[in-house]
Amino acid sequence: MEFNNLLQLDINTLKNINWTKAREELWRRKDKLVVFVLIVVTLILCIYLFFGKSRENATLRTHVTSLEKKLKALEKLNSTKKDLEETKKKFPMEIPDDELISKIANLANAHGINISNFSPLSSDDRGMYTLTLVRLTGVVANDFKTMWAFLHDIENLSYAIRIESWSTNFSAYLNLYLQNPSAPKPPMSATLMIGAVHIK
Image: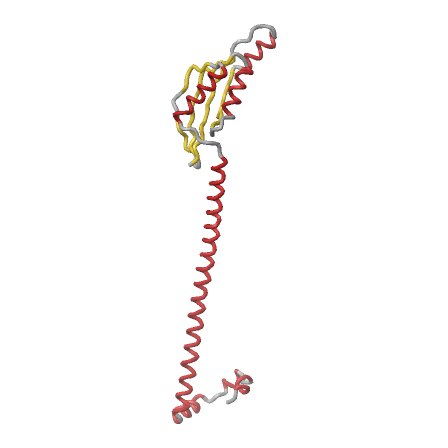
């Protein structure tokens, strides 16, 4: 049978085949039986290989997709690490805990400010960084301007230091001034919580 004839083959034609006669013909002519068996085996092998390769290809595509996601995540991680290193370079210098109190005491002396008490240092883990806290009580300045200059200088040190919280007697100080602007001003007092940041 020629290939063109195979293309014109109809399913209904296959239904009308006398399979008993075809089987007898195949048993009688062994050469046709061998060719038929080879064709069937070849078709089964092709189908098996096709579906096997399809499954293998699907598995490989899934694996490639997974690797691409991991590669993107790795690229993002490397980019984030680079950004973190750049940020660390720009971040103010960390101050060792043992120097924190002496730096603040030196600033207070430079401004003529008295500090009654430095509380012990405590560390607070904030995930990406550790915050070392020191509490100053009885911080006394002659006037508001001196207190403000002291706070300003703490915030502008070249170290990673910040004022976490502070409270003053400013309202009492202001009330006395408003009652009698020419009266001598009482000293201004404050309580400060100062933090030193240590990047991990």
